[in-house]
Image (cartoon, rainbow, N blue to C red; front, side, top):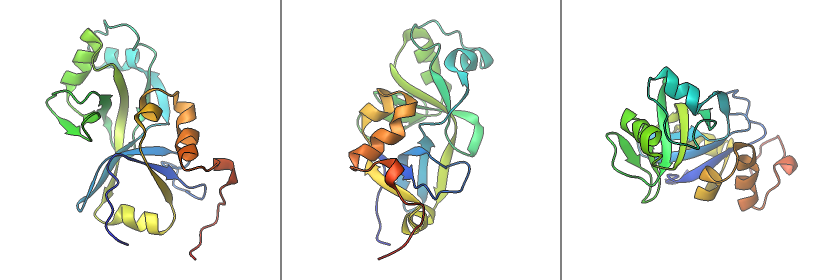
Length: 186
């Protein structure tokens, strides 16, 4: 398969995806290069909201509007570590700038800024991330495990999580319910 860069793209799990971590998921790819890929699942909340998370990590949540935001299962790698997908990118201790508008930060300072100042306003917090070694994602794409589409920040930050997968599919002009479960090659 030819080299492709899927940074700032969505991966849409095909219906035949049997891996329980990724079945019916929408993954946002924050980095994809010759070493592999890193992303976070953006439509699988866990049984925790930001108020509970901030209490557990002992950061007082003073800013309004964040209390009931869900925390997401970002993927099966480092599930004990938090990752914050946010816009704007800002300047934090440990941020991967995905593009000029979106960042993925793993340092505590971004959470402290959200708790105290409500900034960055557009945030999605995950526990864990999804990772692929060199060539692994390309192999999965060749096996028709994923559909890909350029990411839309509106889907990430403006839509309820229940609508994200369907919206990403719609950008391709596809209804998820009409996808076949079998795979094949022409």
